[in-house]
Image (cartoon, rainbow, N blue to C red):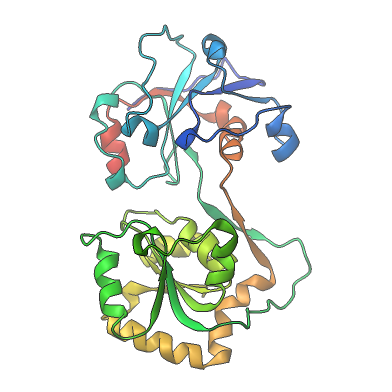
Length: 314
């Protein structure tokens, strides 16, 4: 990784060209979305490749490169001022081989706090309303539930689930068990569960996805988390808002704890105390993620990732 801070060429109007839409799902760029939707002026989003030569940043979503649905335009001339940005919200173990991208990209965009532009799946916000009492959903009919689409025996979460289900009843939904939930049914279904198994498919550092922010917090279920260490969850989640699998000597011990906790209304409701003065913000709109490049653009040094693999696995 090499870098030089560009202090002489500070931009006030920045053009960000998205070479292709992530997962082939386009959003409207009509008007001035960065200013109108997110209060970020001087930030122009584009998906018209004819603007390539004048774009300050060109963004490439890695998932589509890995799936070979898209290719890098290496045949096109590239100005020295233009920066290419590698975007991935996947854990390192899911990114595949990055060696072919050595010496190509200037910026990284990821959920990781050490990325050039950090875009988390969600974050905690101070509530603008007066402090109040959060009402825990009263329609709890299941002890625990889990929505899973990627069910593989090699995942640690699979082994934990297999043992946990022998101790407590777990309602399982999702494509993996042929019980899919559409987006309108997801949160209402989870709200009927005391606990949600927010099990990530990897234990990669800082990899905390919508399983915590949306499926648990927004549904009104206490998350039982598995993924990065507890300390990484504590960096982003409210105090006393989750239960970490690693805090228990076995899945069976975890199951007994959950059973007892659900029976104690006062203790159970204490996991929702943070709602009194905080709320959750989700980052799911690609336009918002891209617009957030502009406020930090002029603080970013010009650099080249000569070994993207080493950074992604670091």
